[in-house]
Image (cartoon, rainbow, N blue to C red; front, side, top):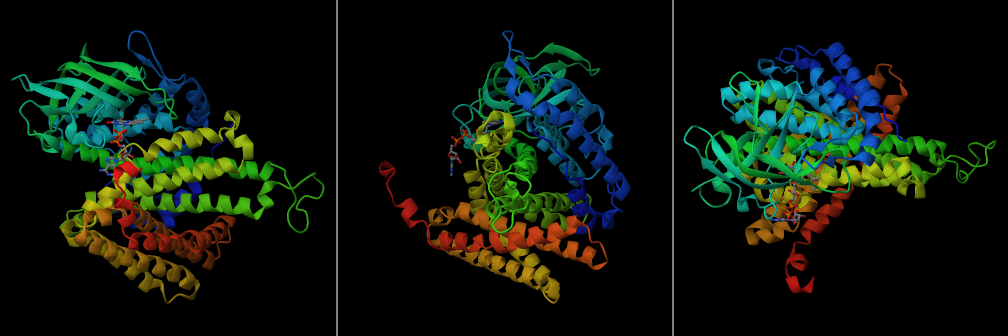
Length: 596
Ligand SMILES: Cc1cc2nc3c(=O)[nH]c(=O)nc-3n(C[C@H](O)[C@H](O)[C@H](O)COP(=O)(O)OP(=O)(O)OC[C@H]3O[C@@H](n4cnc5c(N)ncnc54)[C@H](O)[C@@H]3O)c2cc1C
């Protein structure tokens, strides 16, 4: 039996005091969400998470989804009603344009809400996340007619969206994709092929499902350059918007899997299903990347969400479980033993998880705010800087937050001793659910590869130079403040490791790209640590400013102390990553495949 308390206080601190988003109240969307409105939205999302979504989480995990003999798929009890509430309440379309039925609010707010919903019930929130992702791709690349036809019903939760990339022989390497699209001459195509691992590919929650499908138009070039994107509804949509015949797409089976049991992972068979091109011929990857980039940020958020709920429950358990005595005087001499929270190693573990969670939350919101501002700007320099930043940080947020989020869920499970291995306590579900985040949306090795082989060299390293310059400016601006001296010194050391690692990788890449790629996961983690350290420096600064004007809340004291923990004990890991990168790839690459 687990509990969940949405971290509204922490989110408000980030939005109000660290990111100071009220300074943006002149921008569309931000003006509709001043502080009191934001707080009301977050509080209502917290209520929904705690009272509606979380109570369905363990049951959904145990019952899972069922594929019925007529190829329909039933979701766990209660999911249908809860999803309907999310749609009716405007939660799916919180940041979507009002022209299509959205609320038009900042995406930053939507991500904060998404964290809560995902902590409370990751399997259920996945349906919303994928629907939002499909809407995002349609908004950028769909025709006006497609937008009008699909988006309002998706935002209202009447219809859901899916993302169809993977095929049995084509996972990471999408260029090998075989699904075909045959032009019909009336603007439509017939889609034929098999997609696997499609989240929410079939379900009985919504009256229609809008599949976004990658396929190859007959005669298209081989490889990644010959892939196009199609919208293929489960049920065809009549001119007046009503539902027509069932399309020729069916669920062949659902996977039996490690976690997220409440979300069906489907084999979808397309047998000359009717679909329509989204965007331009052979530009499908570009269109799908809108969805994939959002999904990568969302996947980092999912891992944080599991780490957060795992932490909360582990901390509660540590305050209750009586084992052993504190070194020195007993904390509770009247009880047979002290609670395990008295033991330094238990505290170290909990503090490690918490230090990650709070910085990860800050990084997701900080990064999303940049895209929110850029989206509302007509200044090419602002747009370019945000594009560079997000291009660089998206694989880091996906790869690092999911590696660390999963590790944190395991650390939280450790706090229960053997009881953490038992289903009843609930800690193992968080571990199982978090594990997928390292695998899907491009496995983490691919995120590291994307970072080092594509994002780093792009525009001669413009993005990483801008990131390092930003760090230098921030350190310089704050170095004079005595209360921030230790913080800035720790950040300077970490940032210097990142500079040296970037120089090493660049040199390796000139010699042999494999040498640079051998260091890619270390580089991704090094950059991730610096970004998280930067978040801690900003949070410590904001907390100290509030303390200086008389706010003595325990929340702020804990914030500063958790930040100091991160800077002392976690951030110095940058040195280890640098050392590994400098070692090059020789003893990784040289070993022949047969030797493994
Ligand atoms: C529960 C679940 C839900 C999913 N949901 C969806 C969905 O909704 N839609 C969808 O389209 N797909 C979905 N997927 C598929 C998922 O995105 C893929 O499984 C994932 O991208 C990896 O592809 P793969 O499994 O074929 O692994 P492979 O591509 O076979 O990779 C195997 C391993 O090799 C590594 N590797 C491969 N190539 C390289 C390289 N060049 N350099 C370094 N390492 C490499 C990978 O990192 C990985 O560790 C889902 C999968 C699961 C399990």
